Image (cartoon, rainbow, N blue to C red; front, side, top):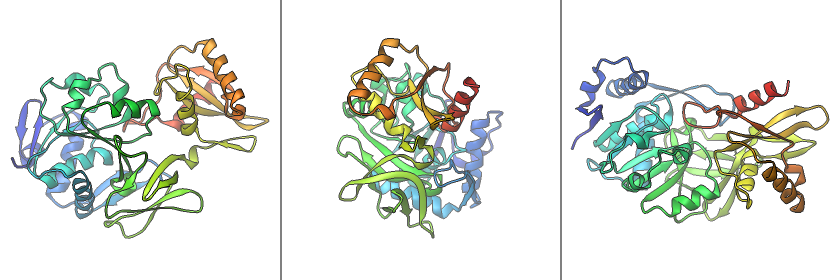
Length: 354
């Protein structure tokens, strides 16, 4: 079947979908992308700040095609055979590249309103062969293993995965890949086959290096210059790397630098009931230490778990990584592309401690 968009139980060609009248903002974003594709117009995205200050970045259609083809080749996707599930917003590069891959493959794509509860909208016997999600999709009560396993290949991006999430995904019967990429690199430049690999492997012909500051640098076949990021990483094998977190999220407490993402993983790995996604690590200003570690949870914090965490970290000689404050929040600030908005979380913490 040639490229077809399925929307609200109707099927459209590319030109027909562009002309659909709608007041839905997320649909208009898809139409804007499709119009640019049809007319070879430039594509403009707002970066998330992976390489510094967020900014507008412009790409050509040929660059999107090259990036899409790299991922298509890496996943061995089949032209005219795949059926994409799209539930990410087209204003962001992650959602737009789902559309680009479907267009390059000349296949079917079903578009849904971006939602963390996408599995509520899927039929038990759905036809989707490939989909892209963010980790928060797996933490919803609406998540369905049966519906998930019907999707042959799944890409998960936008945030790190905890050990618990990785182990859970390994038990699923389909093929799940954790992605590494950003707006500046037009989405995926490296993949981790969760069932087989402990880290990310660059997608050919992309090249990854780790610089003197331990940050990732990326060179692709569709960008003229190397991209330097604020993502900290280490090599863990031949052509395989692990992302450690963001250098710009680092908490400097009394000269000790703590990475919040690594600390979250360490807490999840403890023998306590700290579930990924129910808490995040932020920071607050401290007159003596400069900054202090704050644990923010969206569930009621049991005092016995806090005391046990204190004892465990002390016994492991990790006392300097122990959160100094524990706060409860009704709802975490989440960006439109499904990531925890750490700057907003830190701003919320500062407001609580005024």
